View 1 (cartoon, one colour):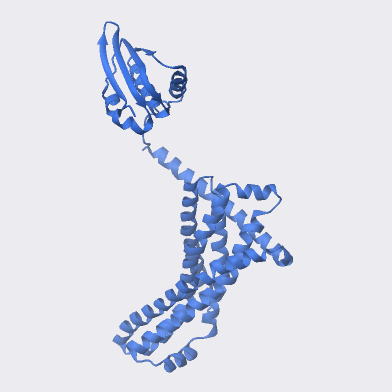
View 2 (cartoon, rainbow, N blue to C red):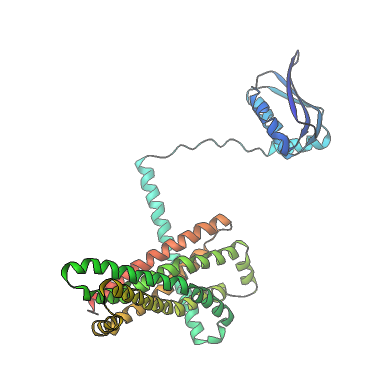
Length: 374
């Protein structure tokens, strides 16, 4: 392959730039610095391409860009030795070189700051309305599915239950077990100062059954399954599969959203229960090791001090957490705008919003149950 080269000659008519060799993209790095080093001057500038053996889009762009720089200083540009094919390619590339957009100055005025706050507020309000509309649409399809259960896609439901629930059991059980161990260890450290080690059982059971068990399970599900929902449906949106569904008369909410939401509604309480049991097991084991509270004594204290309502409070929250996670994840997927980058952004937003809403909802439930003295 002949290496590309450029030489600059001065004659009576002005400057002659002689370009030779194969001006192909894979070899342009050898002449880029030479092209960049040429300082445009006025007068007449002739581009002699007689000895150019091959020219592709990359080489044409390098020549056209240099010609544009030369014209910018007021020089008269001529081309010589171009074949018809090279001339057509060079002309096409020159016509499509974008103009320099310049750098927009950053806005720092108080008015611009207020305007940006207003834009974000309006955007957040519109997103809230859109999400509420999507929630209403999902609840409508969910009620219709309950009334007409034959409309539910059972194969999709079972598949989602496996992904959401069965495959999440190991991580949820491990998380619950470690939370129980940590609570027992930290509680024992503090309660030993007051000679009240036995109350570590109440500390573990009430905190796990009412709050931590289901809350941390919901956070794990939001990060694990919620992100998967957004990524999978968002990828379908990018590939226009959802538009194809509508063309075929299929409802994307019924086909894609309802099986996922129902799977969450079924499996999140089960995962919460597994997390609770694993946490109690971990707490009991740590109490036995660190405080010499035997398993029998642990179970006895658990029965005496922990009412059924502590467990029921946690389980009541589970369906609401599941609905929030499923709706946010699927709504974010429907907002994907047709690029892989958008899928990633929406997946991140889905996880963040779902976790935030789960924690906020848990706080509201705490206030509600406290007001009821439950």
